[in-house]
Length: 200
Image (cartoon, rainbow, N blue to C red; front, side):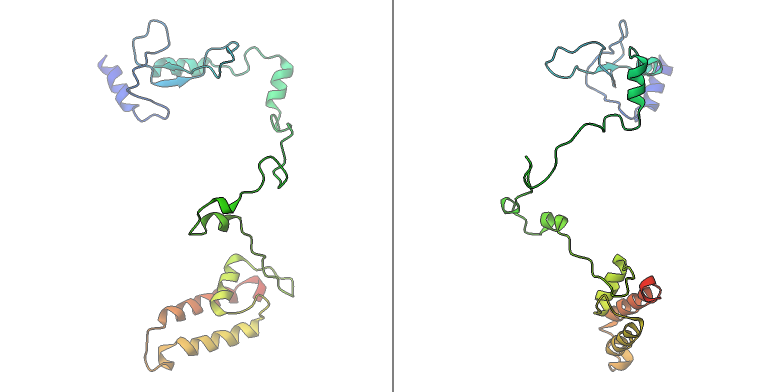
């Protein structure tokens, strides 16, 4: 019995264990508490809802899992259908459109002072470059730091960088270091864009 108690203590953090519920193990003749859930008994339900799960002790749920066979009682055709890669996905689903049953969310019904709900569904159009080179999200953020449009070329990038460094650098401002944070952001943005494919 001591060994059994020690084993229970060592497995107290096993996934799925529900302690202290007062349920006995569903295995006939077992006096241990039923702390682990197992599928309900086989057979047709009484249509009042899903059948309740069985609860078993650790030893009996392990034995149950070892002998459990999902395909028991199925024909070869039913087993083949259940193992098909898209099993369950071939059913038609309803369309989620403005004219559908659900419709779009009505933002006027929500108090959204931080714009947390609407911001999730808002999609700002991505800026396009005339040369067709793609911009990453980081490229767009860096361009915003430098105050440049999406179509800026490499020479425009260099000119803007020089202008902002002169504006924020302490040596150009009588030793004033209050704009060092802005200067660091400008330098980081320039370095990132200089290595970006759109400015190669």
